[in-house]
Image (cartoon, helix red, strand yellow):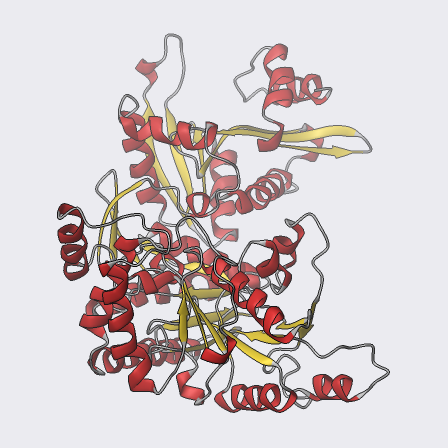
Length: 585
């Protein structure tokens, strides 16, 4: 707060700014420090930028005043302070800046125009206040908006301001004041969504967004798929069993029959099916517990940049340091191993693993299992080569180590074939499935394992919602419709090739960008990690939802519903290409 007096003095001496009371500046430094920058030389403030964020424009910083001491003017200090403030607020989701300038204030106009140019973004001027809007003598004030697609941002904020008495501006208050700060996607995409259909999700203001996020892989068959919805509605309106724990029900029987007939038998897979709690992390927990029970060994081998879930066991085999830190306790009995191409081909695959297994002095005990993703989704769309997966499976078989494939995100057709490991021609000992296995975004998880591993005692791994019958209904409907033949698989592979072809052409135009993926999980990888976030934000501004992934969030990740049309894919890819061109050109 001690800066407040000095800020008042700088504003007073500027002879340009509207001078507020000294009390205002002291209070500002107390209550708006997070959106204020003060520049000092030898401990003495010589300039400041003050701003705030309106509730009805949560992604826009409004700059209230910019002032610089007379002896520091003309040195670019105002611009540097603005850049510093925007850089500080950008990780919090701030994408735009607004300020008001009178038409005769050429210095301020030049400062903000230069700011837009340096940030490689738009600047839009619009009328805000006329002289007769003020009770005293005051010149007109024009609104300047700086940021991606600034004109649309201005119109959006203007609309929000005119709807202050509607539910639109009340709901964010509830999210902010009642919901936990752990929420993340609502910060990245602050729109309040209300309806969705296939690949389009609509907010409460009627704006349509293309969804290339797909519920993080839980919506392979799109939002509100008519065929699946019809089966669900029929089941509910006929008073079908909703909650059944693990009791035998008609819905469960019909799902198991369909899963065996359409998924397991055609692929020559002989698996028992366990229904753990209906989440990805719970099926991983079941897999780890079962592997330890079967082998009598404790250790699990996982891989660099892996992600397997947020409960303690799944976290222990996850690589992300931020998520691991949330456990609050040591995560033990796991050892990370380099994923495929981690060393860029310099080190022979599994050389370290084989060496320590053979060395009785290594202190390394034979593990119960190895858990692997064939494509690491959250880790940055790292695609394991089929030959690498085959070598891993052979090593596990030879050493009598169980192989667990986590197919929670990449299963159910995401890579083309139903299981992502099919291309490698391997048969894991244990497979975890969730997300799109429910067919309709409904909660369901399966743990599949070879019959000889079925050593569970009754109730040894249970859960209240492990038998959610409506999910059996939607899962069966999806499998019967999409997986009774290979038509859907071929369509998915063709769409994946279409995305990949466009990304290859895009990457050929620019340095510092590459692409990788398989099927309908595709990615753009940026040498400069910050650019991926900027591309994602530009896409959101154009009403396309894409998220980032990777240890540095350096990857733009595409997980569109598999039912997305080619026209919708092209429309979304056009938006992505435009965003990439803006940040790389």
